[in-house]
Image (tube, rainbow over all chains, first blue to last red; front, side):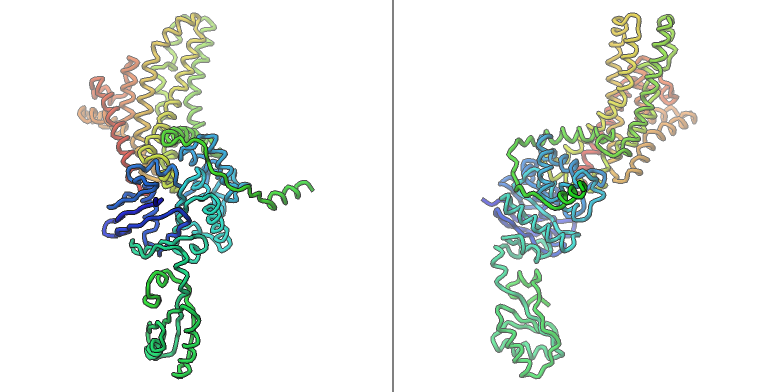
Length: 305
Length: 307
């Protein structure tokens, strides 16, 4: 049984299509939802929560339709929104305990769970202080705590590292990974930063322009190491043709750049030899970091320019 | 010495006891609604918030209650000194029937100051997505918030009335007889209290739900509640009874003045009401209609609002 099931899910805002016939099953685990800004990640999460009505199609969570069984579904779902959503004049304890009750927990249990969850996210000492005085990192932790407080079976995190410095990002990602691994909770992490998602997830779903690009276990994404960009002064087409002749996937991106698919170390030697042979001055040789696009295209050189 | 040890233990060790799941009861939607109702009521009185949030409710509540306490004190003193029965009671402005007139402005200010706090705060801090992603529906949110506001206004109105009730009974030479007399006034007191809280609560809540900005909401509520009757007064001076009728039935404060007079069997002081010369039921119908429309607008607003 899939935990989340989408069937031709479509959402339009006027003339803009945010989700375009998305059909997908998500199994329990830690799932990364990647896509650039505006790809439809937040829209998808909001539809799963019943915060938005889909234009057409169907979404089920725990085998319940989110449109007709919203409150039942949401009792077991935690949501960490992307934007800042905290009142400056409450303390973390008051806010989280109140929201726990909104999830259906009795008042006493809500208090107990709040203390436990705030300790889990590392906010125990500051929990009685007003949120207005918190740092960005602490605010993100409060947002995570309120999503966890009712012990959900499904946790939806929208850009959990938003606005954090590198150290804060590391801590937040570690927290997300531990939360998913230790509690046996299904976590869906939406992010535009593949590098971050890679570190916490075991399954990746990539969407672009509201369409599914690819959904697969993380392992199958990392097989390909990326793209080698060769920058030369001119005659890039000539170099590309020569590289293809030697059996590499290569393409001239412009008159002075060639992109080579990098599946092993072989292209480095071939490029070096060819450049010497052709007498071309090399300006730069660079292995491109995974960008979302080249990971999800079958031909990595196609869009990496 | 001790303080440095405390500091090092405060920052130095985080005990990882592991995470435990929650196996206890999940009470679901009904509990969430009840808890949100209680929360709204508390927000109205600044309970569980900083000192600044308590200033307006305490000051307004104080002004609304002090006349009742003073009036009862004077009455008790007069009765103690053997004033003839009925004389002081009739002369005193502190009576069940007149008290709404005394605190009408305070009730209005209470609505203008506190209702935007309940309805606008969650919008101001983008908290709605945290509420709507939980075990309640958007409609539930709107109704629970409104119910908290209505209960808060009801308390505001009934507290001085209870003081008057208790004061009248306890200071009477014949407590049992006075209790019977007072008891007869309980239905109009409760009816008028319900009318005030539902009508003013729903109108203020509907207005406040449209802006996260407190100042705008407060201003709009005051304009609707206080300025409309003034306009009505001007229109009456211009000798336009049809318009007076319209204003009397469209202005919540005029409606409540009229229902108060009807329920306690007195005459309303407002020129608009005497000029309008409408049948009794018209005011109750207008109160019901305006409340229902306001609640519909409020629910619709939260159904549509982006979260």
